[in-house]
Amino acid sequence: MVIKKMVFQTVRFALKNAFRKKLVAALSIVGIAIGIALMVTLSSASAGFDSLLGDAVAETVGDVEVQEYDTQLTLSQLPKNISDIIRTIDSSDKILALSPEVVVNNFRQFADNVTIEGGMMMGPGMDMSGIALGAIGVNPDEDATFEGPTTKIDEGQLFENDYEVIIADYILEGGSSVFTLGESFDLPINYTYTIPVTIVGVFDAGEEMTRILDPGFVMSVNTSLIINSLTLPFEQEGYNRARIRFDSVSTEETDIYIAELEELEPKLSVTGLGAEIESMGELMANFEIFQTILIIIVIVAGGMAIVVAQLMGVSERMKEFAIMKATGWKNGSIFLDIILESITIGLIGALVGFALGGGLIFFVQLGAGQTFVTITWQIVLQVLAYGLGLGLAGGLIPGIRAARIKPMEVLRAT
Image (cartoon, rainbow, N blue to C red; front, side, top):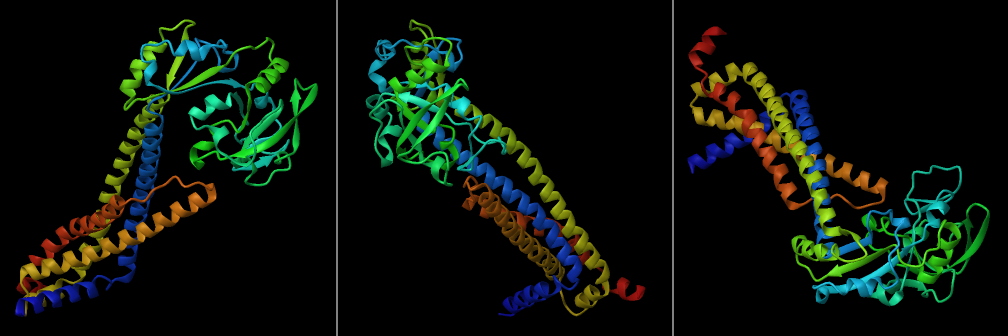
């Protein structure tokens, strides 16, 4: 009972003394908080991108794109029977979906006048740093095997006639004076004349972070070939690329099917989408090394802030500690007092830093209009561990110094 009472008194005494020097304690907390806020922001960004990459790899592990060998996409010419050719590979039974596509060349030209910026349409003369528009021509039956845009129409209907298109929902989200469901817009042809293109449907473009990477306009293959014939210097008859989805559980397995595709005639350039996304993980690994270095700096700087503050406190309280020892305080109790003071400052600094980091993440995502940063429970535990660790590290040397004080020498010196 006596021991419990002494421990309780020691804890209460330590909490009270932690803020005896309010300015010093506040500066220590601020120093720790800034470092922890940086750590929370970087760790959350890393966790968010890791999650996005993991989901993207899982979704695309068996996805492959092919186009004419060693040719730019817009100039690629795959034969009309490319689907039949692809299905001659030995692993054709592993093909879950196959959809040849035509890349509509002129929509990039149209994007010189209208771009997408955060879902809003921008006109000529304004900031042109937005996402250029893109369009593809597909066969609805083959696109359906991928559960593509033609299967995700939220408003309107699927294209049925030439010059009819369906449009991604994000293009209309901010309101647009150029694109409206049921209305036509003029597509410039070679900057000489225009053709009316009618928007007949709106499709769900999917996740916010990745949807603007896909074409915003989808039309029939016939419409896309008509438009390309007006804008390209040659007559296009076939497809630009074909998407293939294999029943695959890993990028290594997909590589086997890619090797078979590369043996076909005509010769194809083959890209494994899952493998490309996996390669981005190497960049994240470099980022995490940089993040680890910063965290080490945070630990050292935060620990030094507490050490300096506590050493100053011990120097000013030498007489106080001498009297405490003379009245029966044990070395361990004095050491515990200093450690608890340091832990209090460390944990408060960590919690303030966590709040600052969380606030920074919130405002960044609010400004960007995207959710791409994730605060995980591991990060919360890291914050608490860093606060506790900084407190222990920062109070160790001052605690030992305070515990070794000899009352007679201190009182004689005063």
